[in-house]
Length: 407
Image 1 (cartoon, rainbow, N blue to C red):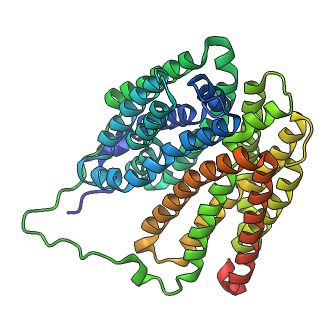
Image 2: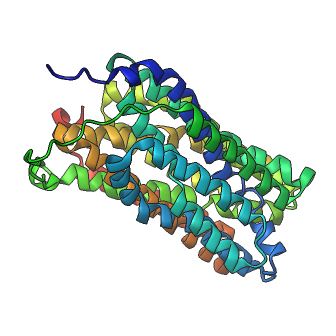
Image 3: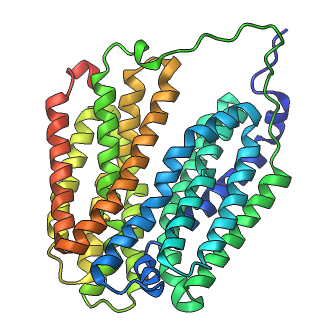
């Protein structure tokens, strides 16, 4: 008789596991994003005085986490398959708690970059939680549970910059990092003591291993998938090229309470994306995912132009909110196009490649934005990002398959 799926232990504890995962994903994402509003100020505090160097080092320090995360994500995934998802979440939460606390002790820019690399190397709680929830929740409730987890991740992206804008003026930059490390340590304790993972079925001795699948061999038309991997990378590149320089841009506009305003501007983009994602997803189901991605890219490109010429912080806030509406529909639609273009057997792996491409964009974006902003001025970053998004929309228009394939 075959063992039921998921096993009884997962049935009994899936709600508690979900609560722990949502709390853990929220706190770790907040910790990763709260330094955005005050990162240039911390870089300056660590002894970098040249304005161009401040912008450039901010981009390097921010992108470092995503570089190490991109390189180690496949390793943690493989170890999770072998030794259990809970163990990977314990590792990620304890590692992040230590790394965040150490960032508060950094004494120079090289230590900051090194510790940001360490945070990416040890992190990965949200992606690990997604896999655990997907595999340990009853099939009838999986969609709802993953939706709840996704809301926790989005809320973390929204709250992080806001908290980062509010706390440093009140308690100081270093104390903000210690507090973030302490909250993630609570996540570690909750994961260690409250989470229950069902044991995975072990391969019987002498049983034949499943033959290895070469995913690309199973995909009849590779063009849509390859196009979406490039678009996923460019979308994250375009978003992240601007985020680390917003604080410096607002300083140039002579904004009062610059860290708080930077947090509001960054959170406005995330809030708009949260509000628009499901509505744009429904629209895409009706009119086609390709058409929606092309439309969203075009709208984002157009909204980038006035951002280069704002004279007041509230103008940037409004434009970033409007741009967030357009960006909200992009990544879900990209995932849907990939999912519809590949067989079930390799869907997970291809979506994993999409995540890796997004990580690459998150590394290259801050580096490029920091370099351009530091050497050629902030408006150039917006103009170059606009050209990238417009070029992406044009490329998709040319690569678009037939109407039947677009739905």
